[in-house]
Image (tube, rainbow, N blue to C red):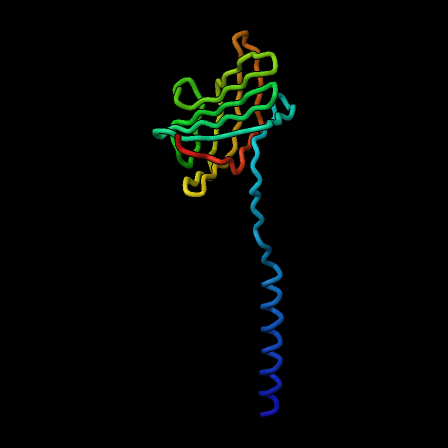
Length: 154
């Protein structure tokens, strides 16, 4: 009986420490709730001063701007998903206006909306693409991300 009691005590101690180890291994997922819109234009950081997003009759629009530049994303839906920019899909688009008021339209690209919560009014996603102006000057947009943008219906 004494051996069973010792064995039971050792088993309880082992279970206690193994459960503590499992608790310690689980780290909480940290969610970035800061609001921003950023990307790289030909490897140069684009930084904005303000941004907004809205949706209307199933369409979504995101606008980001600073004192000298403007960036706009137009989506054919107001939902989660991957949106492709191409000549065959004119309902999705991106536009960049530089500090000299030169307009660059996206000729190809992708926008991935990973969170669109109308009740919390939050919009999050990523984007990239190739933009050209009227003189065929190209800008590559990479590392694009919009996070926790406040979105509202029009």
